[in-house]
Every structure is written in C-alpha cells, then in structure tokens.
Image (cartoon, rainbow, N blue to C red; front, side):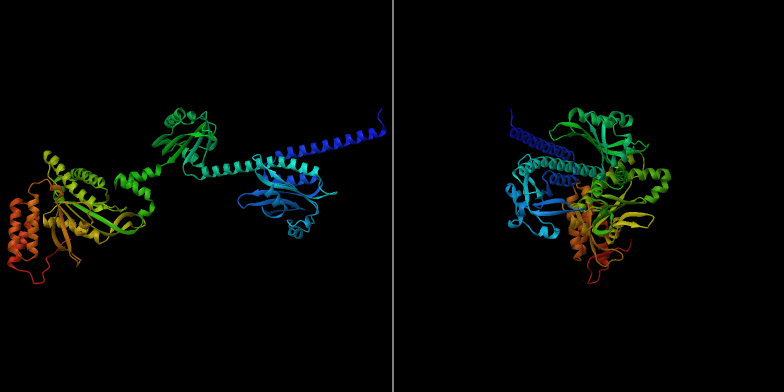
Length: 593
C-alpha cells in the first residue's frame, strides 16, 4: 500500500510531467507554425512574440547577421512601433554571444560592462535580466542570436536556456528557409527583368518541347499573344513556313548542340514577315542535365532593309563597318577623304547617236563595271552625275590605305574599260574613253540637304580640286590624274609620273599633279618613257627649252600618241619663241573648270 506522501509525490511528478509535455507541445506548435512562414520580416516579428510567450519574458529580440556590414540587425516590436536597430558584432551582449558562440544568462545587466544602457535610455525600458543564445545553421556557422529580456518571476533558469537553445535551432531552419526563398525570389525577379528588357526574343521550352516562357520581345516578334504561345508544342506552333524553327530545335534536342539560322524569314502570327537570326540551344541545370531548350530570336528586319539600301552605295564590308559604328558616323564632321571623279569623254555625241533606250542600256552596263571596282577597293558611291561618278575613300570611315585604294581602283577602272571596249567593238559599237581625277585632303562629311531631302556627301576644296583634275585629263591627254596630297598619302609603290605644277581657277597655291600609269605597267617601253619625261620636265623648269624639246620629241618617237609629251612639245616651242618673265615659276594656270 502507498502512503499519502507517496501518492502526493507521484501526483506532483505526474503534474510536472504534464506541464513539461504541454510546454513541449507548445514549442512544437510554434516551431511548426514558424516553419510555414517564408517572408523574413514577418517571421522575425512572430519569433519575438513566440519567444516572449514560451519563456515568460517581457520582451524578446532576434538579431540576424548582416555579412555586408558585419552587423547584427533586429526588427522588434516596441508597443505599436516597429523599427530596426543595428549592433556591431563586437559590441554589447548580443555581439559577445555572436562572437564567442557561448550562451549568456545575465541576472544584473547594469553590472555588466558589455551592456549598452543607451538603448534603455532612448526607449524608457529597464532591462532586469537577459538570456541570449547563438543561432547556428546546419553548417555550424553563426547566423544571429536570440535574446529574451526580463523574466516575469525570478531569473532565467537552465531550463529556459535549454528551451531557448532548442527554439533557436528551429529558428535557424526557418531563417535559412526564409533567406533561401528571398534569394530565389530575387533571382526570379532579376531573370524576369532581364527577359523583359532584352531586345532579343527569348522562348524557353521544357524537355518535351512544350513552350514554358515567352518574353515581350518574342511576343512582338512572333505576332502572337503570350496566351497563344505558352503550353503549346513547338512542332504545332512552328509549322508551315516556320517549320525551319522546329527543325533547328529538333537538331538541338537530338545532339545537345547549338543550332544557328542566319537571315531567315519568320512568318508572323499577324500576317507580317520578319527577318531574324535564330539560335537554338540546350538548357542545362546545375548538374549538367538537359532540362529543355531555348530559342533566341534577333530581329534584323530593319537592319536588312538598311543594309540592302546601303549596298547600292558601298561595298558589303564598308556597310558592315558603318552599321557597327552606329549613327555617330553619319553626323557632320571634318575628316580626311580621297575624292574621285570620273567622266566618259564625248558622251553627249555618243548619246545623240544611240537614242534614249540604248543610252540608258550603255550607262547601266558602264556603271555596273565601274561601281563594282569602286566597291571592291573599299570606296563608296557618292552620286552619279550624268555619265560621271563621284566616289569617296575614307568616308564614312577613315582607313589607313584610302589613297592606295583609290589609286588601285582608278587603274582597275581603266582595265575594266578596256575589257568593256573589246566587247563593244566585237558587237560593232563605239568605244568609250574615260578620264579620272582625284585628290586627298580635309573635307566636311555628313548628311547635307534640306529638311525634306538629305544626302550623305562631302564638301570642301578637296572635292573641287578632284573635279578640276578630272576635267584636266582632257587638256593633258591623260587618263588618270591625282594631286600631290594623294601621292603623299600612298603607302605602296606606284607607277606615276609628275605631270605639272598647276594653279586651278580661284586658287593661288599651285599643286603638283601626277599621272598614274599603273594600268600600263606591262608595256615594255614605259620605263624609257618615264625617264625621258622626267628629263624633259627638269629641263623645262630650268628654262632649257632645247633640251626639254629634245626629251619630249624622243618620248613621242616611243609613244606618238602620248598626250603629256605632245602638250609639253607645244609649250616648249611657244616659250622658246616667247620666253617667260624672269620670275617665272613653272606653274601653269588652268583657266577652265
């Protein structure tokens, strides 16, 4: 039989056990409730309330470590006010617990030198006791501290320490879950922002080729609303004229490699057509497992239209450079340019004999040959002037070999003309003759014109001089004339002869003019001609008319049709009969434009 005292002890023990079970049940319910909360700020507020209730404390705080500032921060409730405080990790009781990882149970905070009384002074709160434990994640790293203030009755006990420590372990899980959710949400928002702002259309598909996401650019490019695209199979959406997209996607799915389609036509859902560059690539997760595919659509419709227009005026390479450089290259600016003019001799009489239809046919054939040469040597077509051509080297983009390219183009134009004339003679048609002049120097480059019509061109003295030199080819009986400024810019050897010192109409400064004979470099007598010409020019400028006349007559025996030698023979005869004044500088004034 049990005595009354024994029954009392058993009843008291049973009561303690029930009380403990109720507390454990309460802790379990709170931790389960907290585990379902993912918003960090809301979680902290609920943790403080639960801690206060479980430990019979007056107030509780939760400090979380901020790696960026090396501080502990807390959102805590002070009546109806919610504010955040920050504590350096080497300050206060919370800082000491976080730094050492040891539990602190302080019965008289004001006697502890680590306690910061300023918080109490600002809030009007009196701290009588503190229980503070570290919060550690599953990797063993401290991520914060949990703190209870002012036990209702007595001081915090070892049992309270165990409760708060167990509770802190559950808090660590909740905090990590909330942080993970916050990180995932930030990444999701960041990725969505990228997809929304990118100008390329992006479509993602799962492993079954079902469309999962479509960004705004893709929605506009496809001409379909997002609702009509998402959850559809790729082979269903990309059928008919867009079957090539499904084929590209199929190659990626089969091989795991990126598939490209360049300059392809995309039939839009709204009936329009776009030109795109498409990239189909596999989607890979963190374990290198393929989880789907992605399509990247670059809209080049406008670029293709612009490129097509530009290709009429310049080579593909120059057009590509200009498109890469952007709009700035089309603005007005001063830069060095080699300007070329070419003109068909006696074209008016030829056109009158041919009639309108045949004249247009002749010009089309001639321009095709000449403009091809200009483009192949890096030039751009500025404009057609009747039967003439104005071309630019060094605009819109300056290159290191603009002068050489212009000279090469001029020589090749003469060779193309010879080939064209062979075909014309064989067809019983009249031969064409050509004059080319060009110069190098500063010009104003840009879009020039009226509000209604603009033209990309160049203006300046260099343009005027190039035009004068083209016209001067007729006076000298030459084919290609270039200025001394162009000669100075040449980087490669060239077959040239100095022709004259001229002063064009409207200018005081004389310019040395050269003739290019590169297209005649194969002729066996050319070297002797150049030697005789140089000797004749030297004697001419020394006023030795006899020696000069002898040299030019010898040149005419080699080449009876040599235009410059003929011009200088006549000059020497004239100057020998009527000598120039003593201050004669050898400069010839061109009176015609």
